[in-house]
Every structure is written in C-alpha cells, then in structure tokens.
Length: 129
Image (cartoon, rainbow, N blue to C red; front, side, top):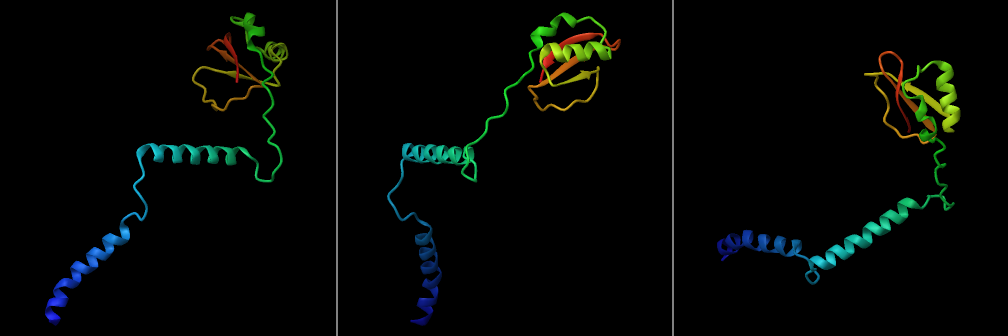
C-alpha cells in the first residue's frame, strides 16, 4: 500500500498546486475588466495631479513670447542689437540665436524667442519656444 501512495503523491501535489493558482471568485468579463482599468487609471491621474502636501497646484506661467510681432526681421542681420530688439518686441524674457547645424535643447520655453539664422547670420525664421 505504501508504494501505491508514493505513486499518487506527484498527482496530489500537482492537483493542489493547480487549485491554489485558480481564481477564487467568479469569472470577470472583458467589459468589467475595462471598467475597472478605467476607474484605476482615473484614480491614478487624480492622485498624480494632486500635490502631496495638500496645497493647490500652481499652474505654470503663461507664455509671454509672440513671434508674430517680429516676423519682419526675416532676412536681416542677426547682430546683438537686432536680437535684443526682437526679444523686446516679441515680449520674450530670453532670446537665442540658432546657427545651422548647431545642437540645441528641445525643451519648450514659452518665454524664449528663437532666431534661426543662415551661414551669413541672416535671420531665416523666428519662433517662440
């Protein structure tokens, strides 16, 4: 009888493992899963938007740059005085001159005026960011 018990032992272990892995509740439909995922995503978004210390979130400052005011500078030399006047006229707090092939950062700054120039330092485009 002992040999027979030892032969059935692997089968009993396998069945008990399969029973432990099975879900205990009723089957969940795809629609219920989607609804639960949507609720969880909404809660995560709300908790991420709320500051940890309980204070109200402060929105970032509104962009101050308006490149439409300085489009008349296209074709002009990008000397120091022109760049500074363009910055003032556009309402930007900063200005940068972008030369051909120059590596630039891609972060957006709504208060910065970008002046793109050609190889002869002539303005070819003006944009905020």
